[in-house]
Length: 176
Image (cartoon, rainbow, N blue to C red; front, side):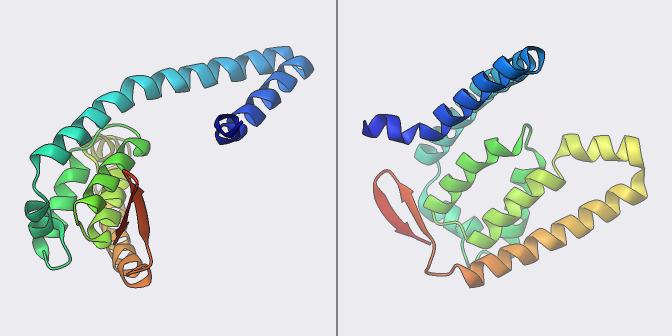
């Protein structure tokens, strides 16, 4: 019964989708197709990222990551977060396993929030698209404001959640 309780939200949505299909068959089938396509996309994108995260977990020493993304890393933390976010490809949900690994290895919340912001705002495919579609001026303004905002948000998170944020990872409590 406890196993079913974990998936209750999924079952509620599935029942809702079935009811929608009975009420409006064409809309229900479109919803089923969209859900199936989304699940397939996630199944093709997520495993490589999880393998990458697993390899990073084993290959990158905690001390090395703290040196480059820890609380006292300074400009290295900004540059490293910027580099990781800019070279990213794919939707934002792929960044969260990487962010958890960074936190687990001792990265500062400031740089993890900044990394997630760079992933959404300034990753290379987005920059190229904005440059071609909207021009240089818009792209530079958007990226500069976004990067400043996410860095300041990271500082805010670091101050606000200091010593109060806990991660559950491999059945260990890790204070950040």
